[in-house]
Image (cartoon, rainbow, N blue to C red; front, side, top):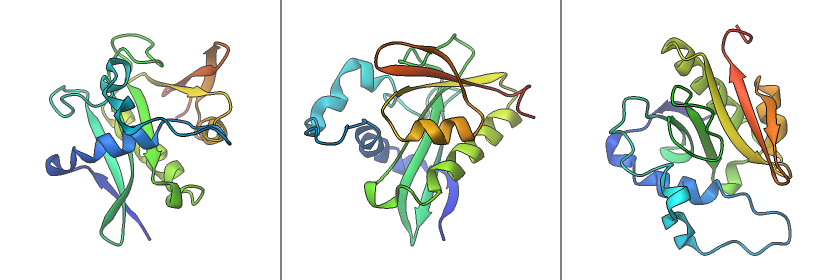
Length: 160
């Protein structure tokens, strides 16, 4: 059984792993090189994490090993709505996917954001990503889309 807890400061380096794991790779496509996470549009998710007041990260730990993370921050990422809405990032190591851990992480983070008084939270997800179903199940709704991605929003008032 895994436990969900706040990330420790000495574990922030793990966000690089989880950022790479969060990159959706469609079936049959070769994964990008690991250094892709150094691109500016991806660094916005993790650079100086923990230094901004809206940075929050929860991790799932199984048998003493961190196996997944969900983190939010107010940033100008793909899912950005405005400067008051935190954006979600979530990922799990491959062997821990499909076991409900991601859903638990999402629900825990939604609870933390609700406690902190946020009105909404957002995320961007590729349309082909199986996680779209999980996001819909946890209360996110599609509010915009382009050819490849959905922009999804969770409204705390409507999901009480």
